[in-house]
Image (cartoon, rainbow, N blue to C red):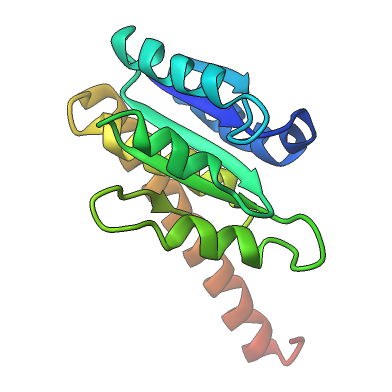
Length: 166
């Protein structure tokens, strides 16, 4: 496995699934687990150590509310950890975002936007692409396709403005 995607609750899957799908599109081997920083701390720590020993290069940890999972994962590995804050509760993920982004010095966690599983996966792919030319090429292709879509939208809007249809 190259990436481990860990969620604090099975109810997080609908929002984290997009990361898994994108990693599969890139051909990145991914293990998905549900392990809670609070309810299964021993199992979580053991999995992180075992996953690192088995070759996992990047961890994505998705959690809402207090969102301690990314920090707990980071405490048990020297591999990059990407925190994916999830919208939940009355603060709709702002609490999770602050929890993940405000890690203490010496235990960094990269953080993406609330519910932005796609960016979490892309960041993991970028990290892996540092040593994998195939992934680097696929990332470059993705960027070219994104640029083409933006430029097509620009051309379409400009044509509508000239015609007075916008």
